[in-house]
Length: 240
Image 1 (cartoon, helix red, strand yellow):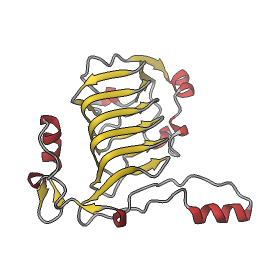
Image 2 (cartoon, helix red, strand yellow; image 1 turned 60 degrees about the vertical axis):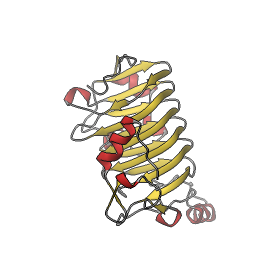
Image 3 (cartoon, helix red, strand yellow; image 1 turned 30 degrees about the vertical axis):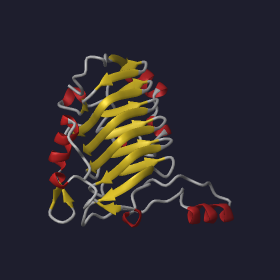
Image 4 (cartoon, helix red, strand yellow; image 1 turned 180 degrees about the horizontal axis):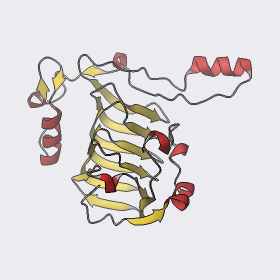
């Protein structure tokens, strides 16, 4: 089951109708073909805004979850939001905005946000190479810890957050829509395209050491992802 929260009631919408109405291509340059091995027979749709007392967990658990799950509205979580999955590629598309206290997006998660994402406290991303994190407008967080250097990030604006990094990760630099590429395109009279990767710059980020709670740090500048998830879920301190 993609999520066990009873507030989310899903209705099947046939693929042809659903794909015409809910286009993730409007948020990400990667289409469904980059997410699913083949087109799903249907999408699972929840109509309207959702307000849930967290924690809220998303993640595909079996073949039945391999489809696009659509919340047609805003998602508000009074607590932490977790989206972690492996092996099965279920995706979540929130057509409006996401509001939550903490968030952990990890492994093979496929997250698409039609408007903005607001995280009151700590956002942690620890993605695999095929994972997607796409926010059409703004990403706002108290702190954003990017812990893997993998995944495809497509964010409409430069994120507003205190940026945190861990040791020995290969991060990709932020680009405000690649100013040099824009200039070259204008000079050549060609179309200016949004970059396919809008990532994370270690030059703008602080080490987790001295910022995260000591119980969450391993070695000099590493982290324990499991301990962070547990601390979020139990409401324990995340910062020193």
